Amino acid sequence: MNKLLFFIILTGFTSCGRGTQHKTQAQEPNLKDVGVTQFEFKEEIHNFGVLQAGEIAVYDFSLENTGEDYLIINSIDKGCGCLEVKTDKSVYPPGSKGFVEVTFDTSGLFGKQFKMIKLYVNTQEGAKELAVVADVKNNNIIKYKQ
Image 1 (cartoon, rainbow, N blue to C red):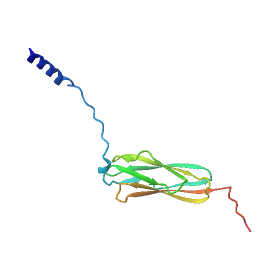
Image 2 (image 1 turned 120 degrees about the vertical axis):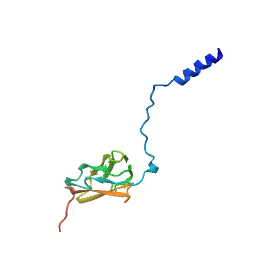
Image 3 (image 1 turned 45 degrees about the vertical axis):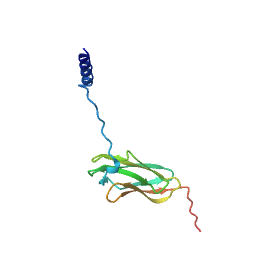
Image 4 (image 1 turned 180 degrees about the vertical axis):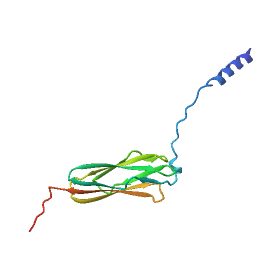
């Protein structure tokens, strides 16, 4: 009788879970194991044209990871307090697309402006530069003539 009871309990435990599937989540890459990759922007310089001082202009630089490994944006140097730079994500799988959003605040500026943005990435070069250009008109600046 004890053997029969043991067999029934053992069969019950081993049959539990049959027919159920375990879902596995896509694993995030181990960023320490990611090598160098390649990527490209549709354009690397954007000209906003003529802006009035105080205007805020926004542009999205489109990018594509054309390499065979994950693209990682490690950091961004915006070089100027007049720029805000955001990415839609910091890790791009091979073949994926994304963007870098640049917000240019012209408050207090005048004349021709050329502003650089440097992205530090896992490519052979290690960095990629973007630029925004504008001709900022400022009516608050008075030129004195003698």
